[in-house]
Amino acid sequence: MRQGRNNWTEKYQEFAVTRAGHLYRSACLLTGGDTHLAEDLVQETLGRIYLRWGRISRADNPAAYAQTVLTRVFLAHRRRHSSRRERATDVLPEVPEPRTGGDAPLRLTLLEALGQLPPKDRAVVVLRYWEDRSVEETATALNTSSAAVRTRCVRALARLRVLLGDSLAEYAGR
Image (cartoon, rainbow, N blue to C red; front, side, top):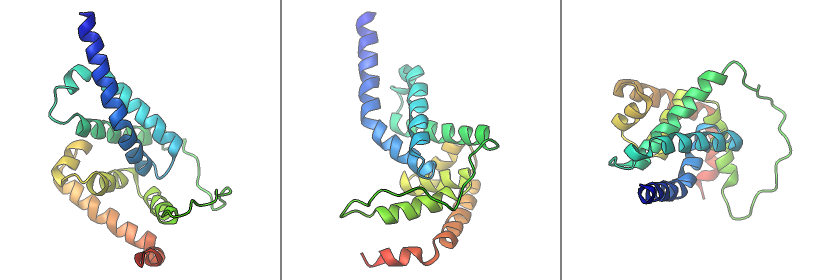
């Protein structure tokens, strides 16, 4: 019995180590760049997966299941904390010097635009275009219909075009 439990724990730890970075990047996109909240969401996601690891480890795609859990944890967090949320301001703190050779300004522009989308629209964009999921897979992850995913996708992309406007034109020549 003890040998089986150790093996189970080792397999979970291996899964968590290999998926944590990807989950964190997805969480950063979902939260609009809030790295602290992203870490909390990943921690909660991994905790929920650990509790059900025996069943999840036998699934066809535990990684997709983890992404679904992450998305649902994010949406639940947004519902719980929508009224107590910090308010945005036009005054930004000092920004650290950009690293050389990167596309940090582009990433920051995109994160800022994502952060202005409603949570469910942001989740659809992240799942469809960052995670490269189909409409049906996204609908399953968000527990909604395929038509709702398509509608949210069109609305979110239109909103991103308005938000980004010409700000991405300077990066197009790279």
